[in-house]
Length: 419
Image (cartoon, rainbow, N blue to C red; front, side, top):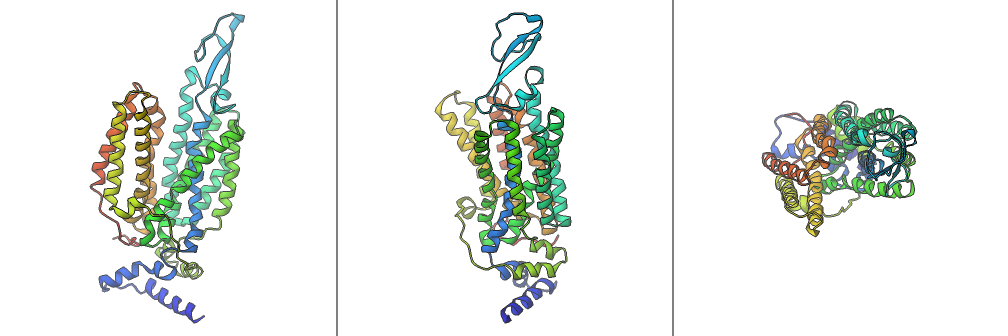
């Protein structure tokens, strides 16, 4: 009991007795009050890390289009006025009244059920663009909600909105109604995508922040693996989408047990609530997987290097003959390097912005980043084949230049006030 009282007194002193005349040493200690109370990393942080599962919901929605609108063959089997013609596979006919569809990946797709072929072919890509447009709005809206009303409120509300829109979308019979629901789902996914990241960063000590940043990406890979598994056992687009929605219900239940971020509570004057959470946290250290990129290099070096590798790989694809083994190699290297930028980018974003504005800043930056996701479906279909690689290589090189302008943040404490 005496130990609890001692920790309480020390914690309250560290949080409330902020004086402008403190030395640099004391200011550094003040910035680490959370780490001093509950440790840099432990069982409690591991428990709160369940919040990152909300990213799986966002990834479900943003990548599910791969199986909702896969490559689909179609063939006209019925013409007007019973005209007898030999139809060719994948060819559109003005006097065709009935097509049959076939996909290697799914039994039924949005393309087959809504007839997204010929002059309606653009609608398949539009379904992805509309959800990414929703994500752009969502990261900003839920970023503001998170900073204004709390991380927990934003986590639960975005997850709930995802469930509410994902499940009904599997039952609609109208293409435009489906896209309306997908737009709202995109808004909710924007919140699920970015809100959990500041929570993880705010509860983790600076010694383990690299590990935490990499952990934030684990749900992305898990979600991608589950998408393929669901598509195998649920080969109809509606049952496939319904299965994803039901899975999100279980994630929502887990998220409901995630507590509020103590840093957010302190930054918003709710010290008593923050102390209650910190006093209930365990202090058993936990070792995470070593993340070489962020442990060995500075933030700017890591991001710039990853973008540079991406640009070089994409440039190599331009000059590599189609079907050559090097195409696969360069594609994998480029994709891996671009994925690596996320881990360091999340770290930098969390370290650059103060607690009162951290989630709003995440929302703004993520919204800007999702512009590319909105137009990506159309870039991928551009001709000739080397044009997409050229665009990505140029953007990667430009990104390297901007990365070099960023301030270095590795090893620095998270800011709790706006300087």
